[in-house]
Length: 281
Figure 1 (tube, rainbow, N blue to C red):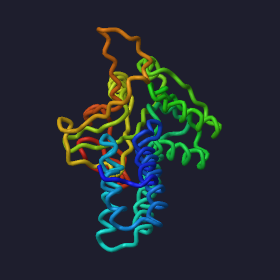
Figure 2 (figure 1 turned 45 degrees about the horizontal axis):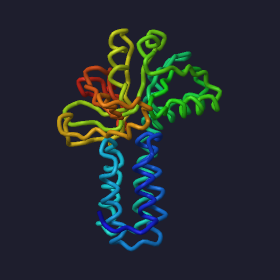
Figure 3 (figure 1 turned 30 degrees about the horizontal axis):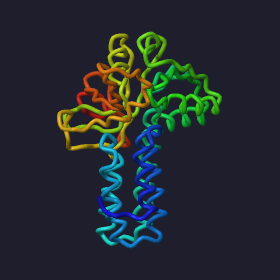
Figure 4 (figure 1 turned 45 degrees about the vertical axis):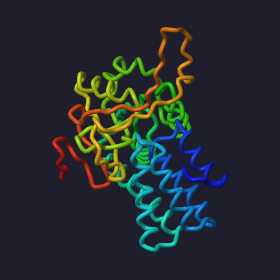
């Protein structure tokens, strides 16, 4: 690894150690940090940091793709701060466009179920609230990181009714939902997507109870890799508070792959896609 200065190392550490933020939120945080760093760093140091950041969170391709766009802008001669801010705006605009497309699928008085804490899903909730669209939410704790607690607090602050459940209660509560919606960290070339572990179980429960399951994911999430090639991040097992024992092996794999066959479709900034992959008109 290159010998970075303290400022660069802090940016890397924040990215690697943040297990609470969704992929889009974490990408935007990193871009904001990078914009500040770019104000004083020389081009070589900035390029080296961008390269290192691209590989820091392999299960969140949106971060790598956003930084690849920054690198492309820099290679084209754009000023560093302007290059970073241009990519950040494009990512923010994509999230807003997804929310606009998705809200048209949500009838009034809908019960929405979700897993983990996607900033794109939260953007949808905020849009529904601004348009005085009544809804309530069922969200899982999303252990062991408990990102669902963060989402529940945000919904409470918005005065939106929210039922917070353990991940183990997914199958029990899916029948009470009208629609299931999650984010996506990466969309793979073989038709699988990556999201927080537990998403596959939610998709299976939604399929069993005939509930529509929509996945929100912009074009920053496209990957050329397949589900057989990707690396799924494994986090510290200390989060599990597992008992010690010679025959006990705790595992803490944070992400998993979900085949598109289990979901109703995908909503990107380009529109609504049902499977097989074709836009709805």
